[in-house]
Length: 90
Image (cartoon, rainbow, N blue to C red):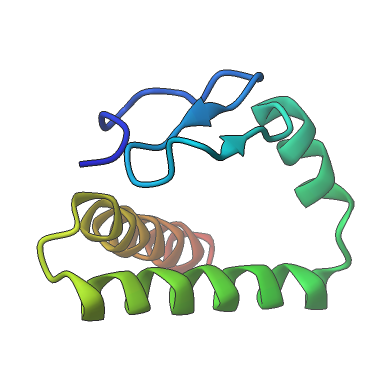
């Protein structure tokens, strides 16, 4: 399995059990949040669409992939919450 669920990836990255020779360095969560906030609205849609496709492929390759299942569970909850908030504003 990959990383434990609910763990935040440290700013220095992580090591994959599948690719031990590879360094998965990445920007910090705050940097990613800032980058997301600076995207134009149409680019944000592209990010969401791409994430959906990535996790859809993950599930197609492994229907028990916990990370992908958690993504779609969280996505469903967020869509429901946003729709409920929007209907309460009307």
